[in-house]
Length: 107
Length: 115
Image (tube, rainbow over all chains, first blue to last red; front, side):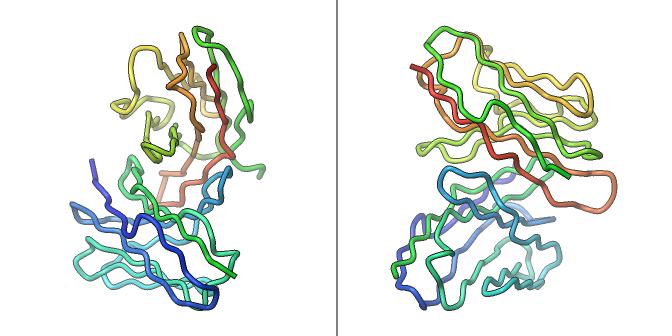
């Protein structure tokens, strides 16, 4: 199965600051998914990346998949308290996930 | 569409009791996943079905756990007997694998507490 490592495990930023979360795979990724989870709630789909070098944006969140398709990054520009939560990357037909990155945004 | 539906949303039971969690996937989706989430272990895949057939159950903790998918619109995850260490949030998710790689959608989860 595909092992996904996320970094950092947790992140505390001041509102307005930019931040990056990384997801690294032990194998080539043929579809990398980013989800966000607020405490006590289900996972909300953010973006899916399939092609090497692909980049997608939604509002202030940008996700990239490197050319080798083994690493993805999620970048948030001008963070807001509404961005707080746990960000998870998932991949594989069996859709296994990394351990998640817990983001806190201080107003 | 109502999305993935899970019931109950909360369950409190005593050790040794049988617990049954239910999931209704999104209509037309042919893959269904059960996950367990805890602070210590994160989000773990327990089992996933494709066209109602279990494909990978390597994540099922032990014989106390069983999952069934009798038809395309319903699945159950049963724990018998339950133990305090089973306390967690259990998520069901579904996906349409009929064509191009699609998005997987999650239900709201069942929060289980075993006393």
